[in-house]
Amino acid sequence: MNKQESAALFAAIKENRRKLDACPRHLFDVGEPPYQFGQKVTCAICDGYMPVTDAAQYARGYMAAGGNPDDVIKNFYGPDYSHDAEAVTCPKCKGVCGVETSPGDWFDCDFCDATGKIDRHEALLYLDNEKESKA
Ligand SMILES: [Zn+2]
Ligand SMILES: [Zn+2]
Image (tube, rainbow, N blue to C red; front, side, top):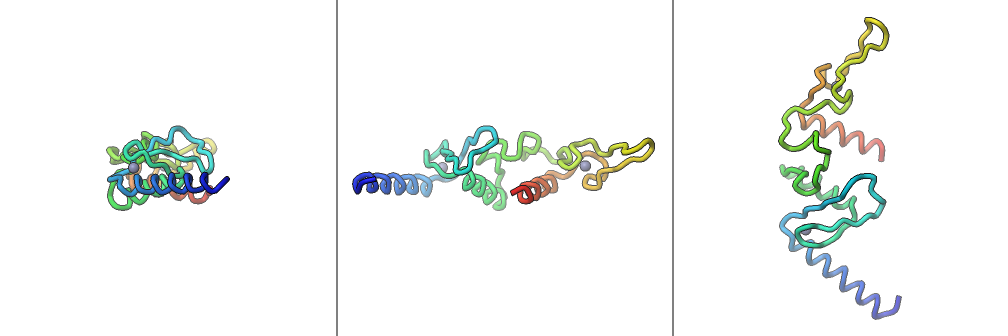
């Protein structure tokens, strides 16, 4: 990379930063998983780009501030966990509630108390935990 090219790259990075900073709220369409490490996503509102991991971080921050992460990344947790749902399908047992491990012997899901439904907030915490432990 020559001097001119690096200057152009620097200008492009600066311009991207300016777009991102001026944006009231980013909106990313990250597409379907799996995501490539270092994959860049572009905001539909400001046209700025950032790594998909940063976009996820932004969605989390937005949710922590009381917002709906689906407004930032469509189907952030998948359609079953949209912000509108109060109770959602238990992510641990997937709504199966309990399984008959041997005849007459049931293993009940302790997470949802074998109801198959769980408070949305609880479900999201569980999914976050899952993601962390896989990372
Ligand atoms: Zn934006
Ligand atoms: Zn369950």
